[in-house]
Image 1 (cartoon, rainbow, N blue to C red):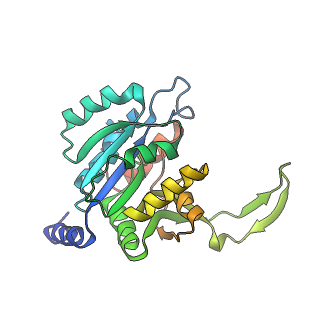
Image 2: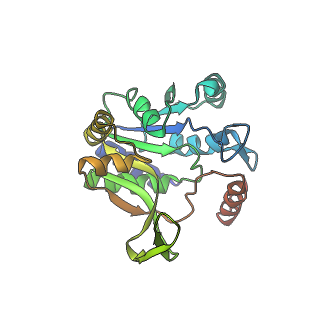
Length: 248
């Protein structure tokens, strides 16, 4: 990153206010490994998934602090890892809950009182870039809530419960939603606690905002911001890194 870009990011940081990142690593990883080995600890070209993710957030000047949410059984190894790698922005390591939603809320309880924005990110999305983070943050500042996403290119069908096509959906309005998902602090607080109070279960944080009636801006960040879910995704990630000219 050049000097101009660093200065520009620093100015944006001052303008945007304090940004806390909650990085989620508390999933069971059953689709990745039958024995439950954490996919965030798998390596891509010799560097672990979580190290790649943390490196990007650590180096992004728009991010002021990181709260890492992990499985209880992994907590001690993560503490050692964060210390050994010298990640300065990791404020604390928190054990997750039974669901992604509860894990994010646990992380939210530990962010700084200075936070103006909160960025929720999947630890397994290790190909995220500083440019993606800043692009989503810019739209969150403008609109209150924004999420990384990519437009659907396949034809999409809606089925009935028996697996037969009901209708074809207009793909020009269809998106694959990714992370980071960035919220004004108060909007995330209202979304998370209202949903918890009502017993509403969501598969991502945007759903919480939708539930209480907030609008969420979709930000096209391309299709390289993949999530490591199954072992074949490691090969996909290696190919994307190679296309970027990054062999590490």
